[in-house]
Each structure stands twice: as structure tokens, then as C-alpha cells.
Length: 306
Ligand code: FEC
Image (cartoon, rainbow, N blue to C red; front, side):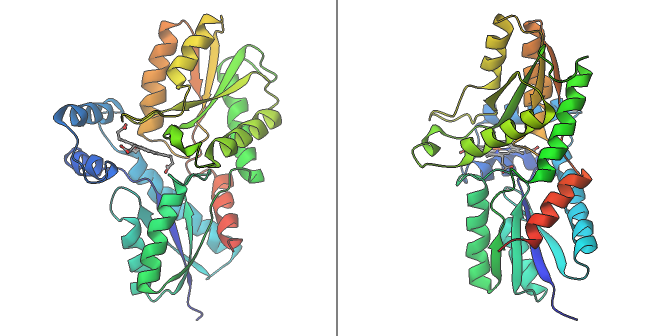
């Protein structure tokens, strides 16, 4: 049989248990352990999302299995998927080394995040590439898939559903759709990073396809560091919307693809509470998770990776 092509599926990673939160947070902070207070704050957020379990772990497993199945359907006996996580085991480096140990010399890397930033997808690719070069695996990468027609289709269906949950339908003038993504330090603007523009492009395409006219893009989940992060933050945007008299908001976190802390806490608990104070009804679109269309977006991007 022909040797298979490896697929390194990269995702953020999450702790496996409460005991792992400190090590995980230290890794995110590039080896600097968090203070007791910072650790307690993060642990509290994990506890708040359904009693402290870590949904991203199983969701990543399911997404990788779904991608493998989609690849097997579209191109039988060609690809074999491996995981490589940014901040948890198996780390990106572990995934690349495992491929090499299994005899793989050619691979494609893809990140479970649709938009490119040097500080997000770019940093996953850099780590994979460094290890690939050192162990002798030839790798190509999918850098982005933020305008893939099936991604837009899957998100559009979720917007129409979400607007329905608010008792409306397109053009839904009574609903403000808030597209959002993880904030990054403001210095990416000077770096001419494509991240903000790609996020706007997805938002525009989805709003147009869903036929909703009342939408904005806003940032969420900014880091707790001393440098400035991209804004406005969703909590400030909600205040502004509330003050302008709006009564219904649909959160659409298009920068993420899975149920995890940044969605289940930052939006479903924190932003929802803020909306409640302002008398604004708040709903969120369902995440893509293993939506068959999303699995096809990933498989198609892998097959067409140059
Ligand atoms: O459910 C989970 O356990 C993990 C949820 C999670 C996802 C996620 C995605 C992204 N992040 C991105 C950038 C940054 C930068 C920093 C940063 C910090 C954190 C912390 C936690 C965390 N992130 Fe994250 N991120 C998730 C979780 N993230 C927890 C640390 C505590 C905190 O600040 O809340 C700042 C690092 C630093 O200190 O320098 C930058 C980006 C994404 C979306 C793309 C991707 O998935 O890779 C960008 C999910």
C-alpha cells in the first residue's frame, strides 16, 4: 500500500482535570506560573461551566474523528489524522513526532480555527514546521478557510436559527447580530495582520447570506495583560446597544468552532448576565462542533492544500 499522508489537526487544548489547570495556564503564559488569584479566577470559570468539565477535550476528539471520516469518504486510504494541541498534550510537537515514528514523511497541517493571524494560526504552523524540519516530515499547511462556501452555509443556517430563537426572522430589524472573535493585542494592526479583515469578511458574507441587516463585529475574551487589546469588547458593545434601546441580541462567535470556555463562560454566563442587567434578550448561535458541513470544509481544505 502507498504510505499515507499525515494530517496534523491542531487545536487550542484544554486541561484534562482541575489539577491540570495550573500547568495549562502556565503554558499559555509561556512558562510564567499564574498568581494564586489568577489561578483561582480561571478555576472558578471552569467550575462555572457545567461544574468544571472540559468540553473542548471531547469536542476536539469528535472533530478529528469527523474529519477522518470525511477524508476517508472523499479520498479513501489516503490520509491519517493526528492531533497536535497548542497548550495541552499531545502538544503540536508530539503530534509531528508521532507521525514520523509511524513512518509518515508527508503531511498537511490544519488548525481548528478559520481565520489567520500570526499570533494564532501562524504560531501553530511555526511550531509544527520547526518540528517537522527537525524530524524529516514534509509539511504543507492550510492557513485559513474563513470564506469557504460550506462554512458560510453552516454559519448562515445558525444565524437564521438563532434569530428564530429570539422570535424573529430575517431581515430581523429587531435583532442585533453581534459577530465576535477572540481579541488579540492591538500591535497586530501595525504588523498588517489579516485577522481583523478576515473576521469582517466572514461576518459580511454570513449576514448577507442570512439576509440580516442589523449586525456589528465586536471582540471578546481579551487577555489580562498590560498591553492594549483590540476592542470594543462585547461587554462594552452590549452597553452601547442597550443604551440605544435595542432589546434583542444574537451572539455569533464566528472566530470559534467548538463549545468551550470562551463561549460557555464569556458569552453564555458573563455576556448574558450583562445583557440581563440592560434588559436585553440574549441568545447565541450553536457552535459548529461536528457539523457535517464543517467536516467537509476541513476535508476539502486538506485535500486542496498546496
Ligand atoms: O475551553 C478551554 O479550555 C480553552 C478555551 C480557549 C480557547 C482559546 C482560543 C484562543 N485564544 C487566543 C489567544 C489568546 C491569547 C492569550 C490567551 C489566553 C487564554 C487563557 C485561557 C484561554 N486563552 Fe486563548 N483560548 C482559550 C482559553 N488566549 C484560559 C488565559 C487566561 C485568560 O486570559 O483568560 C493571552 C496569552 C498571554 O498571556 O500572553 C493571545 C486565540 C484563540 C482563537 C484561535 C484558536 O483557537 O487558536 C487567538 C478556545
